[in-house]
Length: 185
Image (cartoon, helix red, strand yellow):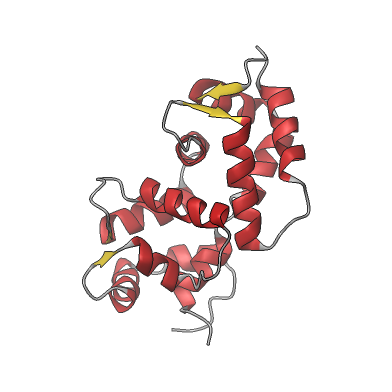
């Protein structure tokens, strides 16, 4: 199939048949469970926060809530992350960040998610508390200590530095490379 490297355009250019074959190779049943997702991505020995984050990612990709990611959900998730409109991506981020499902994101939820992402990616360039402080300082204009979906989307769109921070933090390129090229080793 060739060497894809890290060029996401190449990943997107693959036809649906190849995506389907890759999906079925990883999950012959046609359904991916949470346990299988962690195995596919080689996630072992994670911190509690990192484990929670992966659980939350799974739940947001499991659009029908049946406990499995099927091929349609798999392609929809990859397509959203690679080609989705910025508003779609921000809505997905919000859903992922809103761990308790109350329709608002608070500082603790964001710090937990940002720490978990850093545990998985091993990228600790910026302290999660600092990232959250910057986001809330710029976006939480009412000073309520929580953000609604509308505040989150408007605030991220209005502040290029926050948008860049989110794009960098939520970059799924390494995950997609693992999915496309298979597990190392």
